[in-house]
Structures are given as structure tokens and as C-alpha cells.
Image (cartoon, rainbow, N blue to C red; front, top):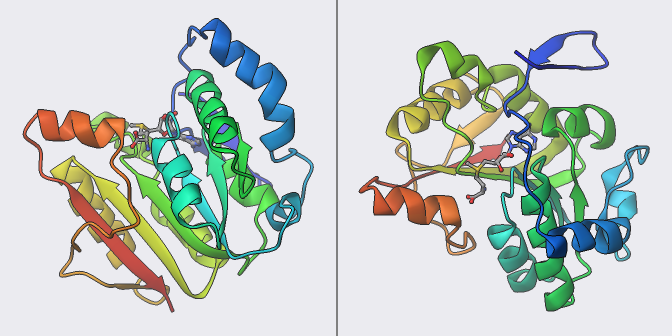
Length: 228
Ligand SMILES: C[S@@+](CC[C@H](N)C(=O)[O-])C[C@H]1O[C@@H](n2cnc3c(N)ncnc32)[C@H](O)[C@@H]1O
């Protein structure tokens, strides 16, 4: 299994598999022409410094084709957004949408979120982290690939300031229970705002993966935590 090495020397199983994505010419052009404008440089040690106007920073991990990222950045101009996604065609689509919407409160990292958090997010520097419809890795032998793991969630807790929010959504009931259990085990860091789940907050736009889950008759689970 592919792994990522972090500065602490630990190797972690990656939460994604790089699919040799077929880029459309428009996506290729977007990566060539727009990524330089929107990207968070890999050597930027504090992601906050990448934004033109200082504002509370929200990170979306695994933004797919950017539907939620672009919608949230347009609806919440008082915040800055860092989107992290490894899938090139999705990043290409998101860049086009950002450009068409004329948004400048978004930066994009086309890298493993674990690496970005280890190297580019300072402790206490985030207002919120949003993770929508992460890959559920349903087979038991693949559970170690799930991005929601205790050590990574603890890292998110370090990145959030006191009172910061962690918001997750999934259409995969066993993953919702996994999230509840993993984050519930970190009760010195996070307080669950649900019983254990919350109603979909107004700020979360619908995405392709939510529509796919609904089309399959799945229930949607939102989980919301406050950093102590
Ligand atoms: C199931 S898709 C959901 C996409 C989107 N959030 C939505 O709701 O449509 C999960 C996404 O997370 C991305 N992803 C998984 N692990 C990641 C990681 N460690 N860093 C960055 N992106 C990751 C995948 O490439 C994939 O696009």
C-alpha cells in the first residue's frame, strides 16, 4: 500500500489511490493557467500567508470537483478557504469554477492532506475543517486507508484554535459510526455537538457524492465537533 512519510518519521498508509485520471483539454488548461494563481506553494510554511486578505481560515479536505468549496467560498466571503485534493481532473474543474466565479478567497493544494497538515498548517491557525463524503473504504482490510484516524484527527485538533469547528458528512452509515467512535475517543480535544449526528448545517452545499449516495437510497450523516 502506498504510504506518506511525515516529519515525525512515521509512514502512514495513504487515504487515496492515484488514478491515472484522463484530463480533458479544458482541465489541462486550467491546471496550466490557473493553478499558479490559486495554488498554495509547497514551501509555504503557514498557509494563512497565501491569502491576499487576512481572514479566518477554513480547510476543506478532499474537495472532489470543488462544488462545495466554490459554493462555500462564494457564500462566505468573510472567510478564506484552503481546498486540498489529489485528483487532478477534480482540481482542474474546481479551478475553472473558481475563475468563472471570480473568487479570490480560495487557495488550493494538490497534495496529500496529511502532508499539508504536517508541513503547512500552524497550530491554532484554523477556524474550521470540513470533510465531506471522504472515501469510505468499506472493506475491513482497507479501513486503515480511511482519512478519519485518531492520529490525523488529533492533528486537526492541533490545527484548530479553541472553539474551532470540525464538520464531517458521509452517506456510508458504518463510516459515520467509525467517525463517531474515533472522534468520540478524543473527548479531551473535541466536544460532539450532535446526539451523535446533527441536521445538515446550512453552509454545506450538496455535492456529486452526496447526490450519488441519495440516489442509492443512503441516509446522510453530518457530524459537528467543537475544539475545546
Ligand atoms: C469520495 S470523494 C468526495 C469528493 C467531494 N468531497 C464530494 O463530496 O463530492 C473523496 C475525495 O477525497 C480525495 N482524497 C482522499 N484522500 C485524500 C488526501 N489524503 N488528501 C487529499 N485528497 C484526498 C479523493 O481524491 C477524492 O476526490
